[in-house]
Length: 302
Image (cartoon, rainbow, N blue to C red; front, side):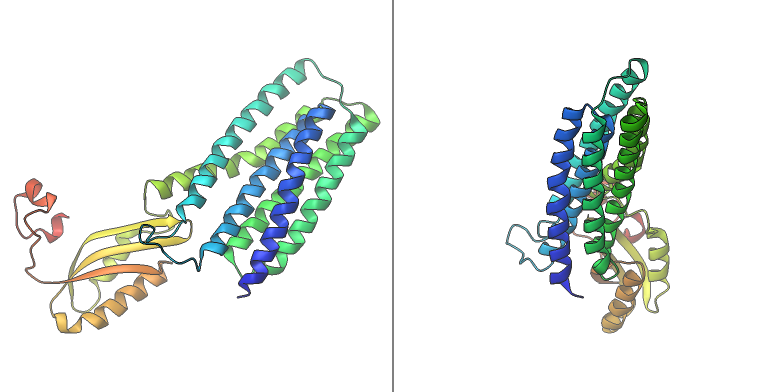
């Protein structure tokens, strides 16, 4: 994989999209266009997505510090959560303004709006082309590319609103298409917030079935039981699994470990930490589950 090429494409695309998002934001206020403000919000969304993808690429080989044993991947999640909350606020503002403009349509500087929206479309096409060349090599880049594709649709909607205002003085086109653009943003905002909270709350990723993994591990020859099975994400796509595996013969632990790791990889989990235990192993007296169960041997009760 050409990681340097992916980083270059992400960096250039981020600069183009982020810079023009502010141009559209200012242009939206100056021309009094909700459609431009909506598209600016969409481009800001893509900017954060591109930034997250870029950070992920840069941190892949980052050395771990003594106090950062998992690196800085959670910064991606925090940035994504802040982005999602900001987007919900933006959608609310646009919906509020659109409602008032349906009742009292306001004049808009159509030609200026059309010019800014057209330049925004060109920027998105350039960024999309840069990302498309490396999208198949990296899932992170592919996700960023899909974000830019949806933003291109937002720019097209803003252009349509600009045409309607410039040539037909149909000012209601602006709030109508601004709502349409907001509806494009809403699923992405909801998805970003949901996935960010899932990671921060250390829930099992939705695409993984822990019961199926536990069943497959128990079917490995020599495995008697599995307990303390935990699956969570450090960041999107970076999944971790830990488990205690009870075996009948510790001499076969290397073969068992290999099979368990293969099961995890089959489910998209690259990082595993497995504790091998001989049958009859008991937890230390400090184990909090002893106080709850009152038993010494409680493999099934974890």
